[in-house]
Length: 164
Image (cartoon, rainbow, N blue to C red; front, top):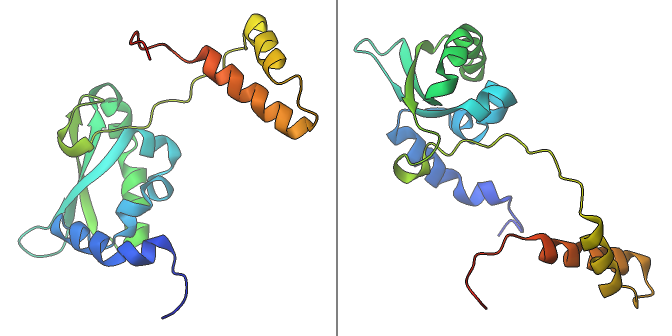
């Protein structure tokens, strides 16, 4: 027994096996895609598989990309190829193939691209006042602030239309 292990240590073998089934000899390419590709490129793409040619050298990396983003990703492929090859330590990837898809609805959630962060809306003053009245009897300022935030979240959440 080695005490506590990082969570990835418990899953390392399963991730490696699943990655190798799709040609990913270096699991880091999957698990750290945002670091490898860069934040902007990682929001637009997902690695799907690596296919090796008959000679064993010169692999093709297949990326999933939203159709609207494909032209911009296509222009950035030389830089992306360099970054991916840096992970391998040699020129393992000779070609990157783009597979275009819709932003949602691909098998097993493979095309779940991170949405662009939305700008935070200014809170409604009436809702803020209601939230403050809910927490006004609490003496501890930290707890009062947390209760106000909770009340504001509850008051402003979208209603599903189902009672209860």
